[in-house]
Amino acid sequence: MTPTVADGAALFEAHRAHLFGVAYRMLGSVMEAEDAVQDAWLRWQAAPRDDVANPRAWLVTTVTRLCLDALTSARARRETYTGPWLPEPLLTAREPSPSPSERIEHAESISFAFLLLLERLGPVERAVFLLHDVFDYGYGEIAAMVGKSEAACRQVLHRARERVAEPRRRFSASYDERLRLTRRFIEASGHGDMAGLIAILAPDAALSSDGGGVVAAARNVIRGAEKVARLSLALPRKVPRERVQYVEVNGAPAVLLFARGRLDTVMVMDVDDGRITDLHSIRNPEKLHALVHALGG
View 1 (cartoon, one colour):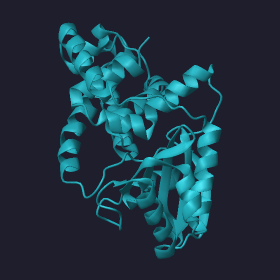
View 2 (cartoon, rainbow, N blue to C red):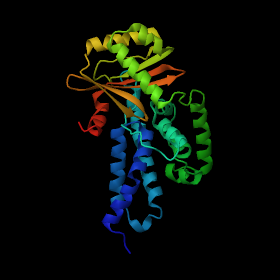
View 3 (cartoon, rainbow, N blue to C red):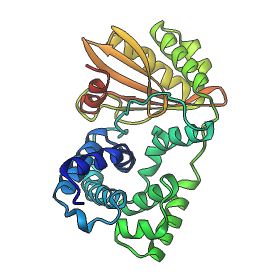
């Protein structure tokens, strides 16, 4: 029986979440990932169904190649990006997973720390690394997806693992501990509590603020507990907070700061050994559109 248009649409929808997951990890952008998935849908509609033996493989291959093309231009844009570049925040939910270990792995593979680590890799390295180590595809499947031999994919993966191995570390803090310290940070900075901030910041804490040249943000990463604390105390005075909301972003606790009637900043913090080590502040309005939409705004 010839598959109908409705059959094709239903099949695509069954794989949409997986395709978005691949695209988002490849690109670090919600909007660009959605564009890649939409482009794959258009190509899927035009594809002769009799020629597609494995729809999932065909769709993942299509999305992967679209992302490889997008990464080439994205890397060029990031070289001239104003200030630190951070991934576009993705609203997630703490739904129970089959096992705690799967929940942790899912959170790590979309965490800011992991996505920033992937910036060390070239487009093909990034694709092979993600497809094999995150999505568990075999070398034969990956070779077809990226257009290289299995032997070449093995070499690419080995090189990619070496590039990300040294600085990579698993979260040592639970979700609840990260949320507790995030709340303490926001309360201390809002109340002008310098000592309170120093107490919860690691001595080598780093703050990256992504304004993209569109809004005011530090042009360089701020390092050191005292410097991070001083800047964190100054910001609420410059841009008074109208509302604070806690959500989950990229598998981690995040705080949304509203000012001037709109979402102004998203902050995600990494925690190790009971202290905040890294603060990621996304202020570029272009990177907040998808999050606002996901929140129903």
